[in-house]
Figure 1 (cartoon, rainbow, N blue to C red):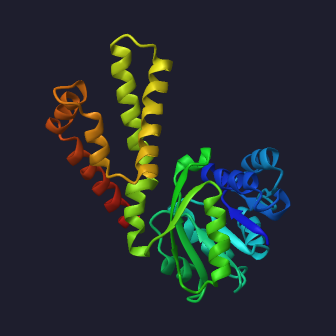
Figure 2 (figure 1 turned 180 degrees about the horizontal axis):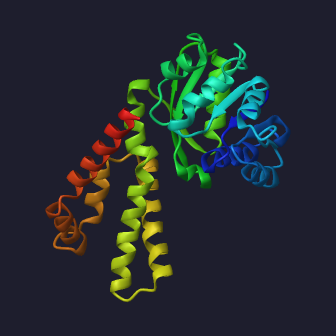
Figure 3 (figure 1 turned 60 degrees about the horizontal axis):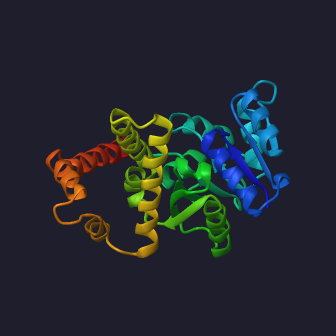
Length: 273
């Protein structure tokens, strides 16, 4: 089994790191290419995979080579360059190859159209940046043309750096809002809590640790207890206590509505990509 990557940016590197750390595949089973030789050299040095720089200075040639020699081909590129990449590789993708796309906003049908093959085996997914620390959350949509073994192989890859869940493709834009982009919202929340702690006299490095660990522990409680987030919130709120006072202010400031409106904007943007 050969896994090929077109695009070797942060998310591709997170995936490669997770695959290798899990022991699913060895470095010799993975290859990839990027638009610059510098990126290829960095990834080769870090993971010891076959990282192919642009052949004769042409990234299209290296992309076609990776496509032709991959059993699972990961498209880890930006939405704006996807049409060009698809035109570069469409004559090189074998019928048996499973294409795994992490390109935001681009449907399975779009990718099949770009490849000129309506029967291409395309699996669409949306990982997020916590994959970099092995705690990613990935939504996965399948075309229905893959075998059970092929789907299992892809899910094993995606589970090597976090959790992976199959969802209908019509939910993929929602996945972008609730997990793909949401680390940014959480980072802002952590930063805001730390800023107030600093205002009150706590050293910034210590403030970040307190805020981040609280978010980590709270998320773990939701996942491991199975309790409703509202119930867990109520467990913290003592009568006439400090927490309910803070919750009152957050409700007055419209925290829930602000988060929902932000996600709505994110989802709508994803639909337009």
